[in-house]
Image (cartoon, rainbow, N blue to C red; front, side):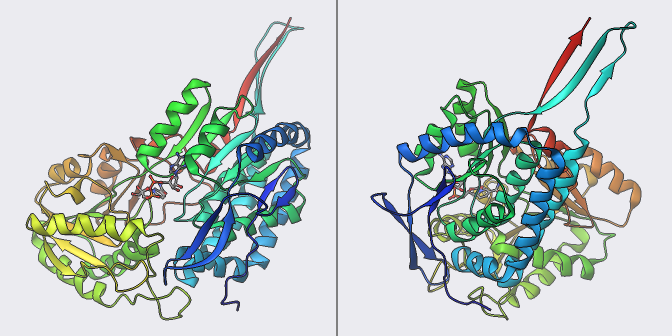
Length: 477
Ligand code: NAD
């Protein structure tokens, strides 16, 4: 298994890899140590113009290709991803910090997205309308055009794969701007697509200063759709830029997932599921379970069990086999999470586990806060880190009210053995995804996206593919 950083960081534009030359460099940091491990060339305006012109040409080539042929290339890319899992997962862990087992899982889940989309694109059926004899009216679907996709650092391979798989399967060309924190693993994904036979011009890979790149690409008439995963403020900013060109958007933004724990759940089993999920990827997951509302009569047992299991979560380098939780992904995160924990503590929350930064790298201890007052910032601002906040509730209605109290609605979870209650919960919770007695809410065949300020549109499933098509009605008398 490779254990060192082995990536040649470049841009992929107009069918060729571009090295540093006179481009401004940015450091790539291993978050477990805080050390700079590589330098990344950042795209210039001229690079972006070349990528745009190339994507424009690539769209014409790719849309004309038979859907079976496109699907065969995407399936080959899936196979290459699986073959290269160890190398890609190692880059992912070194750049982002997550334990190697999670990184391997991310690569293999990414492969399933290409397989799924290769099949699903064949089912982009249109309609034939009923008309008098001799006349025809048909509705067809066509790829929307060149897409600009912006992906974040928490699941850099999976989220880039999610956008690329559906856009490419639908026949769109793509300019991908992955996060600058994790360029090696995302370049390795791009290399799988190139090696699988995606024609030159169809895919471009650019890194850069995010605001400069997004303004440049979204401002171009060539780009017809923007897909972004990241924070709510940046999503709103990009939607405004897209509005100037009346461009389509898919926005997968933040959440603040509530978890409703009812007193009829299997408490030990629930805790055994909840704790690893809370600290998966150090809590840097848009659907991470965060606000735990626990029915009053099991509240004390729940927080005690949560804290005991949390103290057993081993932290360390993601390359160490015993590590269950790695560092946070970048230098901004420990400070942001520390401020939220300090504010909650000052307002009366009890710290039952963790609560502090690590002494090197970008670590933050797995943390459980109990009796967190409603006015604590962390009850309204997503921690996006390894912190669970707990509060008791009395009634079903109170639990739903608490779950729905924020302007976000990405994912919500509930644990109950009562089937009728589960149905009512599913209907009443305001979120794009609801997991009842499960955290498995992200699969290739199901839509993934938020309501309220958590976003716009879905990724995954036929719904995700649909967002890369425009419809056209053709009437013939
Ligand atoms: P941020 O708001 O600075 O950036 C969020 C993401 O957007 C990053 O990947 C960043 O590279 C990108 N970005 C920033 N400005 C951009 C611009 N002008 N154009 C295009 N892309 C731009 O926040 P951060 O410190 O990187 O992350 C912290 C917050 O981001 C978290 O609190 C969380 O809410 C959110 N986040 C959400 C997801 C998700 O999966 N929905 C993923 C990562 C981060």
